[in-house]
Length: 459
Ligand SMILES: Cc1cc2nc3c(=O)[nH]c(=O)nc-3n(C[C@H](O)[C@H](O)[C@H](O)COP(=O)(O)OP(=O)(O)OC[C@H]3O[C@@H](n4cnc5c(N)ncnc54)[C@H](O)[C@@H]3O)c2cc1C
Image (cartoon, rainbow, N blue to C red; front, side, top):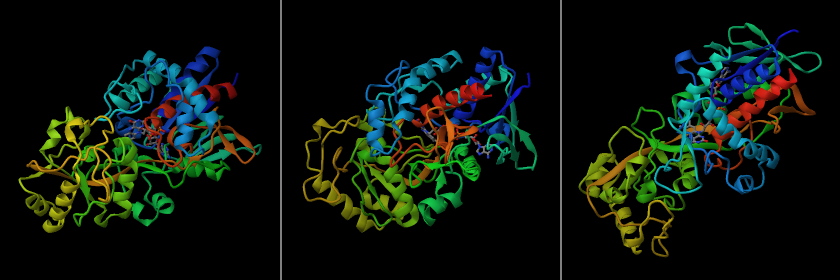
């Protein structure tokens, strides 16, 4: 029997889940299958976005997702998300977590930054632990890894089925099945500019892995007739410390203070919701709309009353500190009179009963009627020096526009699945409007597995 060649493009969670599940499926069915993973990064930089994610997963336990998971996601997308795709995700969530456990990944139930919200589990060690465990399994199962080469083009035969791919050095690889797992286009300034406007070109990728996601897989698939899908104006972004050089240095204490622009003016409701409900819009706004693409989170020493507040600050750089608002403004380069006026006006409006302050829930402590923009929760006056500030920029984590796939992870062309072509993870277009919280890793894992076993079935 001729061996079947499966090539997987990308070495993140989706790609490794595909590789391991394909190898297991082949073993189980007694089939001879060659599995190769092509990764553009050098070996030492493998892992894509998946390596840098804390990997919070919206599941109350490893047993499965909560009731209403699919309906919630479809509602959050204003009805645009594919119900059947997310139903498959839900149906496979528990078995996928158990499968990861078999491969050595342990899970725990983390506290999510400071806020409550949907129940989540997390692999101990985050996404890096998932990558390490699956890489070891893939090697044990005989998967071949080809690092430092980017896939550039897909090849189809006369019947329109996958036959191979071309790498960036011009070499060709034969394939009966190709699984695209090469992420979105957050690392491609030209594509960001095209879909989000010129300002997006200079948006900082949030992690070292994000840079490698240049949309190459999306472009290759579209070139052979894959249908585009997902929200091409959607991206997940988060506010990070402008001074940090570390990976994903998010600063998520801003709901408990105020945020001002370079002119010392507030511009949004910092307490509109739990942090995962405001961060994406806030981070995009900082970059796309604010002068200098920068904002400043201003707090006072009341921050220390919040138990474990450090959990919500992933920057290695200490906040800027001052004993007065004027001194803080001078250190930040903001007009002191404007910042003082803003803080005074906010303090005058922060008249709610702060005895019920609760950082973990929307506590309803809001600014007085008529104050704009209002602050709807956690509105405590800022009167206790030292004052603290973090300069913030908006960093892109991943994009939503991608290629159409069905619940079997088959890539859809104009007339149905393209034979031999599959895709999983960020490259697929299934998110709309705003990122469903703590779902991106789960979809990479579940549909990576689906793609791997489907490819073996079709081989
Ligand atoms: C800082 C951060 C925090 C996050 N937090 C969470 C969270 O808590 N929960 C959650 O669910 N999600 C989270 N996410 C999102 C989630 O981590 C990603 O959506 C998920 O890891 C994507 O997995 P993937 O396998 O599709 O892509 P990736 O892990 O990005 O892998 C893509 C791989 O493809 C490679 N590649 C790209 N182009 C080519 C090419 N042409 N040829 C060969 N290889 C190529 C890349 O180098 C990379 O290794 C976060 C993301 C980041 C960056």
